[in-house]
Image 1 (cartoon, rainbow, N blue to C red):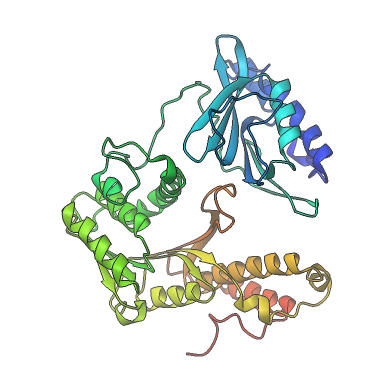
Image 2: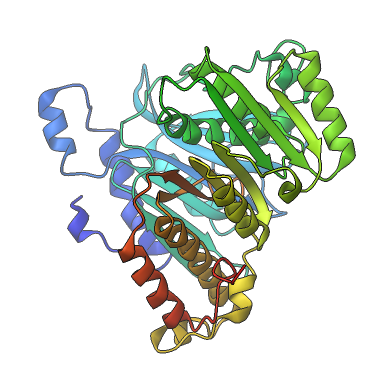
Length: 423
C-alpha cells in the first residue's frame, strides 16, 4: 500500500476493510526472495495487532474456542504472523491474569476474532506494520477514535511460532528476584509480566541514548527523581554497568517514602551493587552538583517540570522524563481560532493540553541546548501514560525552537507554561 494513498479509517467497518488486505497479503507473500521483497515494497507489511482495554465482559471468544478450566480476567490479546508446517498463519495469544492461551488461526479466523471482540470485549487496538503504527480506541459512548504514527518496528520480526525471547536485561538477574519480578528459578512471575515489559521497554529506549555518552568516560553520575519501588532505577544501573564496565557508576534514587527507600537499599546492598543507593529526601535538597543523567518517570503535573529545571541546574547531559497528569497548561490555556473549536469537548481539551504541555517542554529543552525527541514509552495496551521526552545536551541552543515555543503559547492562549516562570 502506498503511503500517499493512506487514509485513516473513520469507523470500525473502514478499519476492518483497511486491515483485511494487509493480513491476507501477508500470508501469501513470502519475504525470503529478492523478487518477493520487490513485491513487499508496494504493500504494508503486517507486524502485530494488540487488543487492549478489556471490558468486564471479556471472554476467550465464541469465534475462537480456547477452553479455560476456570474463569480468569483477560488482560489483552496479541496477534502476529507465524510460519508453521501448514503454511502462513496468525498466532493469537490471549493473556490472562495467570497464564497465556494460544492458538494458530487462519486469516479468516483472525479477522473474525478481531471483528467480534473489538468494541465488545476490548476497547482499543494497536496495529503495527512496517509502514506505520495505527491506534484505535472505541469509547464507552461508541465513538471511534484513531491516530497514527511513524512505525515503531522497521524490520520484519521472526515468524517462528516459538521464537526465542531476547531481553535487554536477563530475567536471571538476582535483583529482579529480590524485587519480586521473578521467582527463585529466574522466571517472570505471571502477575509481574506487565512490570517486566515496562522494564524492558525502558531499557530498549535508554540503551542507545546511554551509548552516546563518551566511551572514555570514567565516572557517570545519575539521579532518578521519585524512584518509587525502584524497578527502573535498578534497570538503569544495570544498563550502565553493562555498557561502561570500567567506569565508576553512581546512581541515586530520590524518594520521599522512607519504607521504599529502606527496601531498595536492602536489595542493592544484598546484591553488592555498590554504586546504587537510595535517599529519603526531596530532589531539590540533593541535586546541586554536576550530574550526567536525570530521570523522572511518571512525575505528576509540574513535578516533571521541576525535574527538568533541576536537571538543567545540574547541567545534565541526558534528561529522560515520562510525564503524567499534565494539568497546569490545561487549566490555563485559552486557545483562539481553530484550536478553540477543538476544546469544546472535555476529552479533546484534556488531550490537547497534554500534547501542548509536552511539546512546550521539548521546545524549552531545545532552547537550552538539547536535542530532543518524544517517544512512546510503552504500548498503549499497557498504560495510557506512555509518553517519554528525551533530551541530549549538544550545547547548540535553538533560536527556531524559541520562536516556535512563543507561537505555540500564543495559539494556546497561555500566559505561561510553568517552565518559563521567573525564578
